[in-house]
Amino acid sequence: MHWPRRPETTVTQALDVCCTGMRDDAEETRLRDRLVDMQTAEASYQRRAEDGDLHGLLTEPGLRRHTNDNPDPDKQALLRIYDLGMVTRKEGRALYDRIKARALYGNCPLCGIGEVDTLDHYLPKAHFPLCSIMPINLVPACMHCNHDKGPAVPGSPDTQPLHPYFDQLGQGRWLVAEILPTTPVAVRFSVQALPEWSDELAVRVKHHFIEYDLDRRYGLKAAVHLAGRRHRHRQLLDMGAELLRETLREDAESWMQSNPNAWETALHFALADSDWYLTKGLDEEQTLHPDV
Image (cartoon, rainbow, N blue to C red; front, side, top):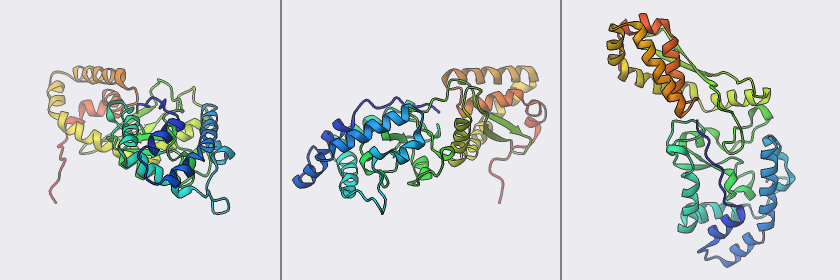
């Protein structure tokens, strides 16, 4: 997964853009009267996030969490300014698209394989309406990940979602794979915590991996890839197992230069280390679409 660069646009600028073209003067006035609250929420958000206390965002007074006991009287207007001002109207949509475009190669930063086609509210706008158009709360995402995350608020620091703008995972390899001796070949992916991670971060990364169903999703990608490369791997194996191993390791190193934690990186390292794949794995009959 590649983390995108943090948006430089402030909530003040976002509100100006999203209010452009509004025809309801009363609602525009109502929203602009909440600008100071939005600025306070943005400052609290950035402070908590940069201090590594993302779970503290949920109880940060400056963010004014909407609850039945403490409702935000402008909740619906704050949600409408996102739906109409940022998603629908031309001026706001340009900002929306710029934030989406921060995702490297257009890939979803939450899974690394989906195509970015939406913005995910890190803090759900239903619970934190003041953050509905706050750029640092808007993360490029694919529909799959956006749907999996949903509007739920985590109940503990261990289940706090990773924040691509603020969580630092380092440059080491933490995504690993295992080749399973099955027909067709199957691959299991998992997280191996880096030494520099805190215990809490290690738990959160593993939770993220499970929550977004990444073992299954990466495994499907790997299965298709291996089906397409089987003939070439068989040719290399006929010239010697060590030649195939070296080729796989070179592929792994090449992928690592691009992204040490891409599923392709983990897959090729696992293939190179699998004695079973280099001896028996390619001798088994591979059927991607068995008869029913």
